Length: 275
Image (cartoon, rainbow, N blue to C red; front, side, top):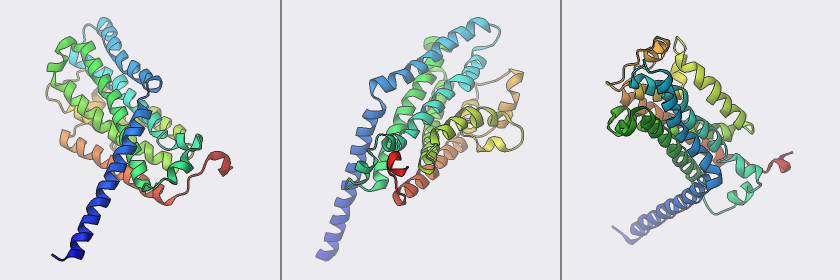
């Protein structure tokens, strides 16, 4: 192997190492921003409230078995906390920089644009995952007590929460790159589409991220949702766990990839200058 080829390989290695180093630096700085105490503590409080909600629900529905109670709370509260956190935090990946007029400074730094956006996306995903997992574990403790850690469904729901956070953050990031009013769009998706679509007849439910999160939850062999009101949910989420994980990961990859491409070729300026 000649010297020129060795030099080329070495330079590629150094360039790759530099890019990864910059990616980690952006990720670390952004994670500090997303998990700042005053911003992050309200989300943790909302997540922990799942335990109190579970205790209250158990007291008013003693006739319902613990597995059904856990499923109902997961469907209507626990997973929603992660969705809401993703909608708001993912919007701030880009929009906060535009509103605070720091976007120009960020884009003039000697860092590839895709590295900047991907690092902030991964930091947002980490923060949302923490909130989502805390919510699942809190709900499990509220329903099953200390025995929650021995229930397979709790760990499955932690997995669903992590992959759901990955997909939600990717989708909401894409919306923030494509629209200046992404917060409104993201909240409409979180509280409109994701609440109504998963239980609808037909095939519309296939286009909901929550569908595949619940598919992971209901894929547990020990889960038997006997409440008639949720029979449609059971029918709509008859997927294998592997399929659900693959779909969620695919949604995240596609959305984050498109967002990265758009961000790399588009111009972003502070709102006052745009006006």
